[in-house]
Length: 417
Ligand SMILES: [Zn+2]
Image (cartoon, rainbow, N blue to C red; front, side, top):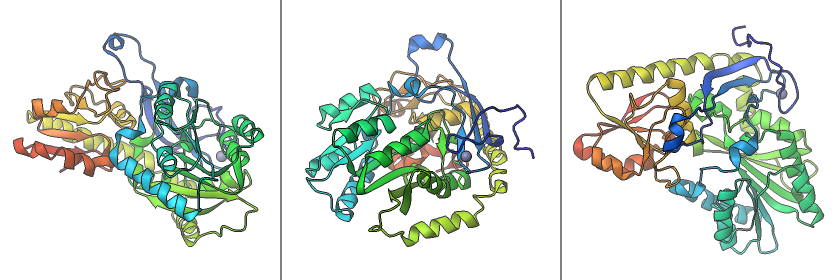
């Protein structure tokens, strides 16, 4: 089988411990996608690590081997959740839905793991509900604390959960958005949630849906910070492995297609399994997510996407067009490094996040400016890197039509708007 790894791979599945042999996709060598560079760092060596995704043939967890310690990745993390307007709307409506559905009030306790800058918990605080954020990145946690969201600067796992429980703290609701993919020790993380969850409590976790990633070609959402990629079926297995049941699931448009799973203690009878949880379970089974054949064509599909994108860029440059990027998200760095797109194609990119402005993209060294730069240089094409926000960005940047500018979106395949 051509998906079998040629090297003798010693890595084991981070959930079930089976050896990993089967390649989902190999994106070559790439730098850490959040390691934005200063001007001084441009002349220094830059570490690159393999971006090679395997699928476990036992539990179907798609995963990277662990190359980099999470301490290295997450202690000075550049991503401030509060910079994306539509993401804030998303989490605000989430908090209202949870308060209504699970009857949360001032006697409840809500914990968010990887609470970032308090972007989500602030809405529970506004409703008078006690909260605790857990966020290992010190610079980001500091922003949360300043805005009134109590936050522990620690990694979450069994040890911290036990410590909180000994202090009499158990949660009615544990939220985790885009963190399950990012934990190297998934059993320690999910095991910790089991300990921290009050009897009758609910866990909600959001993560990009592997089925959407594969069907819509979102290979750029693969990066070193994302160790794991889940189908609903695999998430069910992992939670069951820790004495919990997924009783509901929502399919969300965020990050190109995410799942919000709802977990409870397996012996909790007051929350019945919903039709939509059963339906998605069956749909994934039908789509073949428990058969290796389902995973074997993805690598070639990714290579073809790269060829089409490069064709477009080469043609545009031959016609003398100028191209600027919009955004400096992690996914952009995977895409640009995998496709070898540097300042030979993109003159620069822009980002609203002041932390990134004045820096350079890792690997490709494309400079990052504030969005006003686009008005100054009037490029022919704006290449939208965070394609999951493309509607919002095209609306904000509609002014480029004045000089005949167009938008380019690279995923699921290159398209001009
Ligand atoms: Zn496994």
